[in-house]
Image (tube, rainbow, N blue to C red; front, side):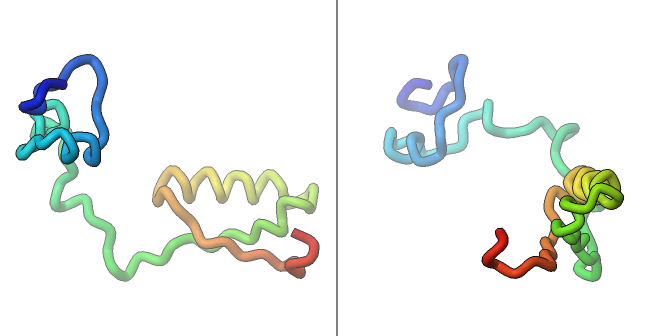
Length: 91
């Protein structure tokens, strides 16, 4: 990337761009309109994040179900809340 922020084969961190004195966002950092998130694709403020009991991983009969819950939460939300029914000394 040159001093004007023109892109080469690799992207530079925002901090590096700032340190280089780049004053505008280089074109390679901007998604084309067709790839940008839609304003209709927002998550409602009433959406509840999944809560997954990680203690169930230790139980053979619940392990597959728990792993599937984690997979779905990561795919649909990218995050989940953790519940652990184990005293902290055992973690």
